[in-house]
Amino acid sequence: MDLESIIPDTYEKSVYDINYLKLYENGIKYAIFDVDCTILPFDSVKVPEMLEELFSYIKCVGMVPGLYSSGLYKRVEPVARKLCVNFVASAKKPFNGDFSLVKDSLFEEGATPNATMMVGDSLYLDMIFAQRLGLYKVMVDAVPGGDKMKTWANDFVQTSVYSFLPKGKFKLGQYYHGIKG
Image (cartoon, rainbow, N blue to C red; front, side, top):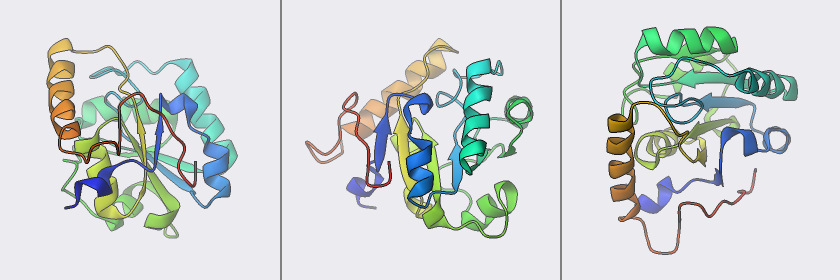
């Protein structure tokens, strides 16, 4: 796999900074969200009101959001229930599953890869998964908090992946909007 292909199409500080309306107007009708460190701190199930409002807004724009997480069912299900979305738990990203699993589990029959975006905080999990399925890749910074040891381990692996990217192609903290964002 060409490492340059996992570079996000859009990179924002958080899920609250993404321009969902513009993405929708440019053909993105479905949104897959990672849970741990993307929409909530690692291992948290406490859904803030602001996140509920964001998911309501995403639905009002016309997008269909869903959760696709490597987290366990007992962690992901209460989050999905609170946000009123479909979900896949224990997903084993980035190499397990294909778009038919995503479509059948999260969305309706008409969903296609080129009308779907993956929103995640990880190059080595979320962006590889999105690239492998042909999805629009949106990366956000990790949500702080949660289990410090697990967060540290995640940060360590993430930093290692950055070191293999072509120089000057992607840098943490340098946010940008892609063609669709």
